[in-house]
Length: 474
Image 1 (cartoon, rainbow, N blue to C red):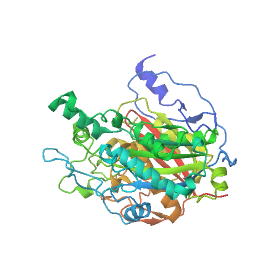
Image 2: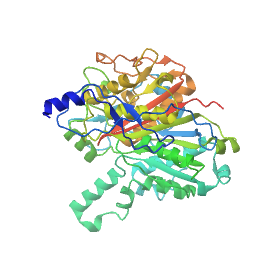
Image 3: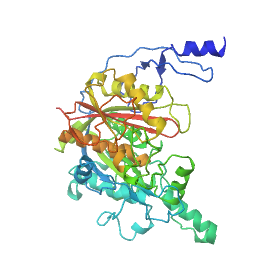
Image 4: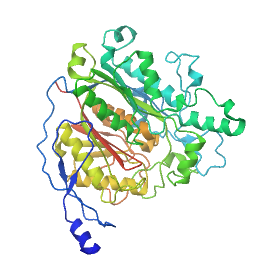
């Protein structure tokens, strides 16, 4: 068969969503029909398999609820303040002053300032840590406090059935880059003995677990910008499998350093709108020119409904389900047909036990890149045939792209939207791309009663992750 003939057949062949799904609640695959697109080479396609109807989880041992949350962001370390500033449409973008950026084509970002770890990290240990560990420890302890598990109450839970899972894209990149700098300038004897240890991605959750005494699963997932949602899925799976009662889970990133900034500039990922940095992050705008580098942490406390009810915990929201998969296409570019993202969203809905018609809010990945923004919209069009009742917004328009922490910070924004009934705007919407037909909550907040919300995160390497939340209903 000719390549042209093969392409014609591929354009009309249903594709199977073969997904790695750590939230494995259902075993049946789901069919996703890929829209017509051009395929450059002949590829073998998997067979067609049908899906079962979605069903919500009812077992209190397997229902996963959110009982606490905390954030570290360019808007500070208080969740309510963080969301209020998002609702007001503030931009967290400003000049980078942590190091000399005078020679860089991009000289701005969503840098965290005035971070305060007092009362949460040992003062002797604090200076040794990379910022990603400091953000992780402080946010993790604040989330536990928010879950009504202060010092006195924490002793009442079984710490052998409590874990920590905090994803990160790059781990201790600042500590590592400074270590390399010392090595090159002064030799190996001047390299800090903590350099290797505090570079490791698992050392954030590891140090937090040591402080709290949590002896369940303690590790980090690194799937670039999909790390947080991937972590939510895996943590929920530990709860549903009966391994733990409670997980501290989320994402953290502290990549505001010369090496990371230079590397992202080199691959043409960042906006260079130095003359007007506060409008640089503009998802879905026709004049978008790349994303804005951010940093921070978002942490949730997840536990089984049974465990939360036994200790009379404050239940904030319910985690319905999620899914992850891979495009297997390109290290930075999404598939033009959005097949991977489409199948990931559909698998998430199946795992969550909800239909596409029940979803009426989407917190989008929407980084402000030319290809990525529209690939996500293509996937949303594939899944949600009627967009009239769906609101879609982009948190990154205000706090930039914090890589492995983005999904967790956006999960907090999603949960606050469920709680308050208000959606934050997507700012910097000047000339909406004509291919976007969804209501993007442009420039002004909107009141909206959320039924089911999903939050999307996609990462370098073709990583896709989608999670679903709703208000808790007994």
